[in-house]
Length: 394
Image (cartoon, rainbow, N blue to C red):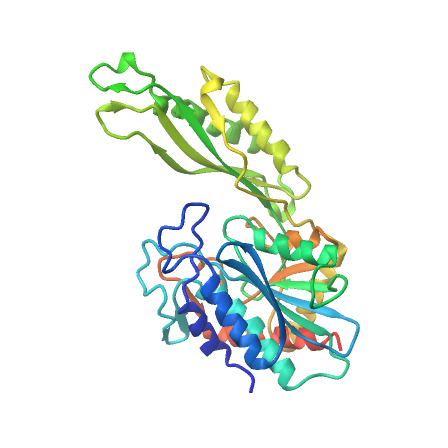
């Protein structure tokens, strides 16, 4: 019997899969994706489908379920298993409660509702297959929120012929993200890294004896702000993607108010446009900072902990998006083609030559929020549309 997308969304929200975001696992009872992966494995077993589970990192496995088709086409419905942390939430993070037309909880919008959509489509196509139906893969990857490593691992499996489920590359990948049922055909990439300033500790009663690393970081921050204003803000906008951007999201330094700090750390987020080299852009920022600080040797940049290219605008992706747009119109839903600033798993699949677009229920405005939710009506509509898109290949 086909699954109910609302009940499935609620069940998935109730399973913690918090991404530690590059830090040590200090809340093992809610962090990492293995509990969701176990649920998905049981789900595929219950449907009697072949599946492939692959370790990307300890406690972090991709899993792919396969519904064999009767045509030579292979379509992938992809969703990531991880969520952002739950700090500051005002609703029960893992409650999955439905209140009116909304389901609340961490991941309801990003992207367990979208995962439930993909799983429900899979169950419907198994229950009532079309003639000449394509093979359908539901791929659930890890670590999208802080590195896209799961999607890259999966793409490499396909490209190298290591997958035991299918041979060759898929014909299309539909990546689930909260797009309000519009279709993302292009987006920015990102590179993130930590920057440290070094100093010399001293008693705060004699600050001149020390070397204040926080003051030095202040110069670094001023340089980054100058880079934003004089380099990035002067660039021409690239269509709907706008301009490249830079942001400093965290800062840490010092051990006590009466000690001159000998270290300070920030995290830098540089959004890149499709076609820009992440490493070249990172070096541009490093060189800009070095030219403006008193002692560049005391400014240390770690290797990037997250790097992803943008998703270029391509004919193949736009053709794939048009398939969704055409099907959605038959349901009375307007589905436009969008270019956006945020990143997704899509570039990993585009990089190996597979057309890939982003589509799903929910709004980015509700993703990662303190009261994250998804609307039930969109869940049902998006599921119906994606099912029809898969059947359109028959």
